[in-house]
Length: 98
Image: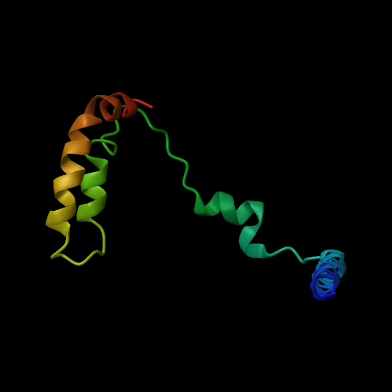
């Protein structure tokens, strides 16, 4: 009998959540000017990328150096990022053309 009560409570909870979700989904959401197409186009600066881009070379080490991590922990993580950057160097060098 106790299992039946638990199953009934779970079913009531499920249907209650489903009813609330259906009721709130029917309300129209006003369009925000922050996410309009013109705002997105203004925020994204499209540049003509001609030539080679070196942002991929040693990207993990560069990201670690520019991070806000505690400076005392950075040398510990450089032990891992520098070998990984060297291992992926051919792929990063090719990726700079795209």
